[in-house]
Image 1 (cartoon, rainbow, N blue to C red):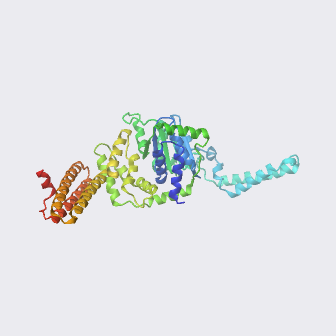
Image 2: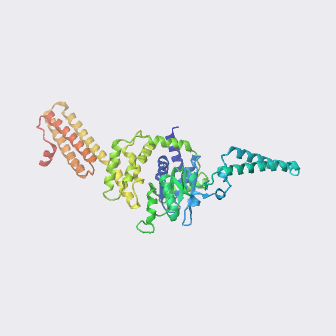
Image 3: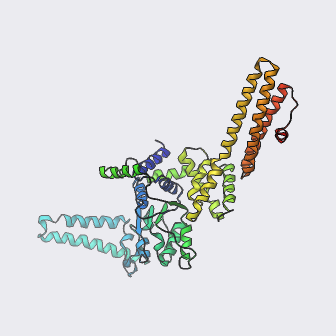
Length: 456
């Protein structure tokens, strides 16, 4: 099974336990494939956190940190606290000895001596052995402490600095102190403690909330930078379909809800990220992205940073779709990337559907097919060589071509991009070609469709 098939199997597995969350599940996958951050907006009880946690459970070896934030949350709860023993002169923190083989061997010997007491606990020589083992361990620890340069050590076990996936619920309720640390973590994958900056391995930060801040409020505007660091955004809703609700309920009652049948390893996810980054992005895709940008900027704000960072999302969508390069349809995934406020979602979706799905192509193709069918009927009627039948067939074809020409004019007037105009112009050229050929075959003097239509 290919890496892509493995990821698709995980997506299908998760979708089987979270109804009507296909968009969210796909965005979770795209976030992980591109190392982007994802924000989920929705009312309580809409399986926002559950979907993220369930997806993470399908990645073996991935360490997760999860926290419900509030004004009382502090940096220590997220990033770890300073080991006080590291601040005591002549002392050494346990974390500094974790990879010391000699210390660990001596500690093992002492553990064995303690575990083997049994019936010998009252024998004098037993405690002599214990004393020697304890003295060796303590003497070695003191010696290492003397050589160890005293500096603050942060205990990060189980915190963000050691997490591959981070889920922060009610992220906008954090206080100002936590905010600054989160900004650096989300944007640069780093955190600073006691004057030292450390890299963190987090692949993606996932955040959830049932509301977004009011950025026009001076007290909440400070959260705007944090909001912008969450590049991908999804809005959830309650399950709408009755049959789907009942199916989920039955699934939960049967005990099959949330079962895992497909997994990927953390190493496989890393290799998937490499494959995604290798998907070619043609110039046509970049030009289409620029067309989308220009169209959106007519009614909303889209930053250059957004535009310049679009392609990893398109690459991930192309990879999931089995495309060998980014295609126009892959840019539909930008639906959850380009909007900033929920009110802009519909605008973004409409522009993407119009420019990426290309309905103008379908319309011009349909008119072209009608013209070719009429041409075929004309040639069939002219096949027996009778001039009167050929004349009648020509008149019929000309009437149909005029009708199609008028439809072409309507499409051109409605075209909203250079690409759509080019499609309608190409259609006109084909209509004129059919008309010219029919004129020549029947001996009539060729007249452009525009002039014929003007006479009617």
